Image (tube, rainbow, N blue to C red):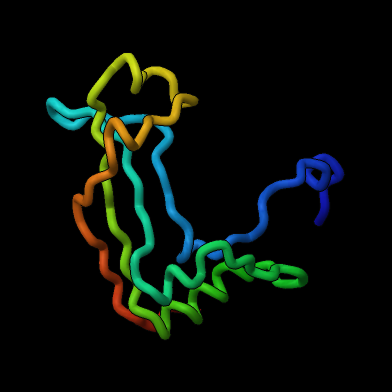
Length: 122
């Protein structure tokens, strides 16, 4: 089924989700701290997928299918990071359109999420 309205919206390519970096846009308070978060792939096989477009023509489940094949062969690792708010003037917490300068507050590793290669459901 196709929608003329949706078809005119454009959109982004079907990027391989295992190679992409994910960022929170808005900051979150955790006790006395305010931070933005980032999840970044760090395993070499995963980093090789960064920017890869998944061909979805005539494949309604293309992303699911490709991730399933990839996760059966690779050990995935992501680094979970936080960027702390250090200056409310330069890092406003009420305006998500302002990018926080990493020179003022670099991202810091909080944890590593490891997912070993594994089969999944059909």
